[in-house]
Length: 81
Image (cartoon, rainbow, N blue to C red; front, side):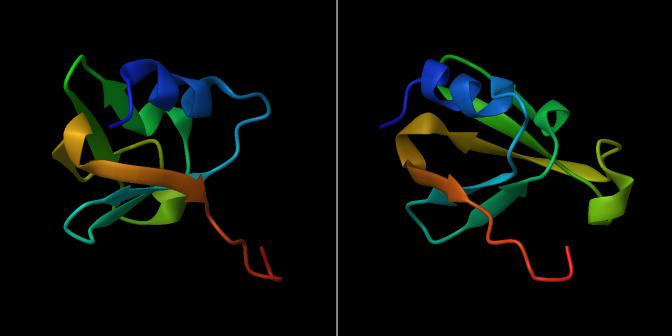
């Protein structure tokens, strides 16, 4: 299980590098802006923008328990990005 500080390290990295959160049920969340995640003691809230270009303005949000986060990894950028 990741700790809140583990998530904060990714969010506070400068320059910020987009990352993907992997949950135990196979769900993934792409975090392309550091303002899209709020970190709690036992859970995170992930803001989901309508489009990647509209970040950090969110359209909806999801909540995930830290116990269900299995890993965090970089988002592979396409050659055109």
